[in-house]
Length: 242
Length: 248
Image (cartoon, rainbow over all chains, first blue to last red; front, side):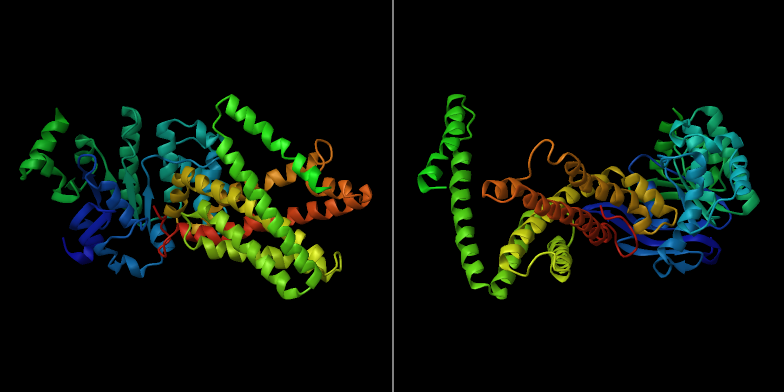
């Protein structure tokens, strides 16, 4: 993959939390306009990688480029609007769904119009009735959809989804999968998502990254999971499918 | 009060000592230390104040207030150990409070510019500011920890550190200020304030004592709110890096 086609390009990125090395010299590319699944066991550093790309953390060494520009040359606020992240816990602020959706606009000093609120909830597959519901009363699947809608309101070019389907039932998982494909196709948004589910990783991705103990052990097209080269990946796939 | 009468007040120290010994509460050592310290400290302050009152030298008043600010900072900084540069933030807060309150009191000639007024009022203002500061720092540390996910969410959506921490900041300011406001609602109903009681015992007209007590109460309202707000706005940036990331 050529560097200029990269939505995100990482070059020897290392991140430590205290003495512990969480990511070790990660080098690779997330292709522009594509969907990439990032898989790997817990503790592989997947979430840390996302937080580095959204600017919530900074690497100890190495460089990250977003759309060809060094992350450190970007203003943190515009970086975070450009690289949206949906965190695993789908944190809801106190108040209604509408209040939560209005948040990214309020942070930029704008208001959320009624039409925009209705459009975005419908886009993520929710009814407009949900707008007035207390955000804390939503189901796990609804919270994740509202979280995605909230991040989408910033119109990010790159969307990072951190294990957003891990605690959802089968129907909600399928809804989210459809939504990811829809966001990618309609807006050309680059989507990178972490999942534990290999079937999901293959079905909803153009590319796959397999991470283990802070390193990318294999990366390529989605069918690499059917024929992994590295022994560690073969073992991981076998365990996950068991 | 005669010296004999003062000696007799030691009975009020003997009672807890005997009870502690009998019930094996283990409070004897601390009670004795507290008693000896209070006697030495208060007499020392008494002599110092007597000297300053008689000299009426502004330099001594300044030194006394500086000493109060130093002691209050030393006491409160332990609670804000996790906040970078907490010492100078506390010093700045206490100095601003002192200048603001004394500026109004002296500037509008509410109280005369004498040591007899400046020192006790400064003591009350700085002392209360210190307690408020400790309350605020305790609450702020726990609010930031409990709202971490929310703060990071706002940052991740492109919020500034100030927007991200606003709820923690406002909740801490409110929580540390409420006790001052609440205690004023019941004042005089449950107990007479210490300064007013002291004045009445010393033979002052109760209505004059009330007027002075009201002055103190209103002074402490300003102290409470200004302390919390100043410490809050000075402290929150230390929770973030230059790249607007939360510090672990």
